[in-house]
Image (cartoon, rainbow, N blue to C red):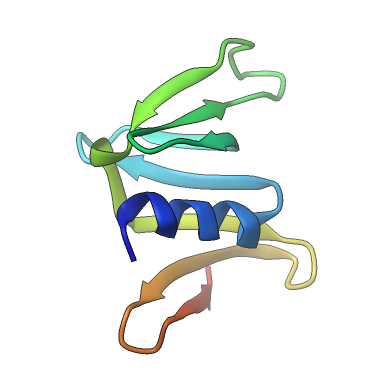
Length: 93
């Protein structure tokens, strides 16, 4: 899958709060609001978050650091796309 397709699938999987790092090691937590061809629109929200949406280029996202909050598991899950399986590998944190 293309990077934007992986992020689109992650957005659907996460259904809410997520966390990831950028390649420059900046850590982000919040909500993916939209996935476009070359960027995502991201909102940090919460009491410490900015109320401004961020446009983050997809090429700046570290795909090895995709996490989302799972209500069912009661913790953040690390989500790694397995291309050979065409499925997510989910690991509790």
